[in-house]
Length: 240
Image (cartoon, rainbow, N blue to C red; front, side, top):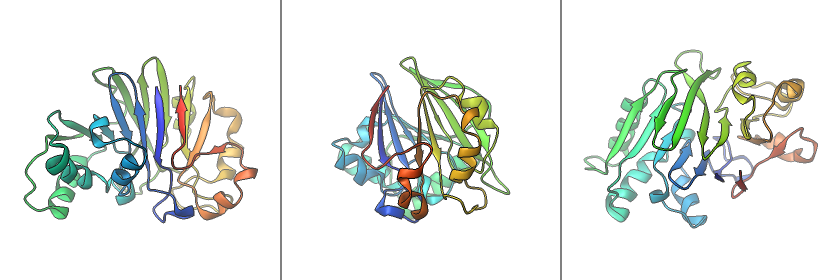
């Protein structure tokens, strides 16, 4: 599995980083973990295109995590003329919200063949060679946000999405090849987000073979040499 960090940043573009979008590519399928507003630019900058994406897994319905989907839609309608469907999965409300966003950005856009599907937490799904499990994390007072465990090519990647510390991360990262975890602040607690203090306190409980941090605030980026785990950046590539 080839992992490309197209966007590793937060909603505020701290450190001038792109919004969240991580591409997992195998021989058979390309999967985006989130699709922030800068995703189309990032794909092209990395020598890739929306044609390399078959599935989008949306962690939650904040604009910095799904706002790039309308841009993919208009690109695929007028430039690539996509024929294979792009399948979009996310928490309850994804189908309606993504459809409304595309219509708001580009009224009357006909096609391309995008399929928007709400999925339930804890229900493992398969799309060809891809197997994934959405699990609920702690990011909304109301509504639902997901992390994902993704399996393909015999490798496993866990993505936290945006979340405060939750023991669900311990269970789902066990044995994973890569854990991609948000780290929004260094010490200061942010409501419904992870801090480096949280991660450091729970480090011994996380059993993934490798952990990379994303969604970092300015205070995290400024202290990147003091972090317990490696901080990913835009353009980071990993082979699993």
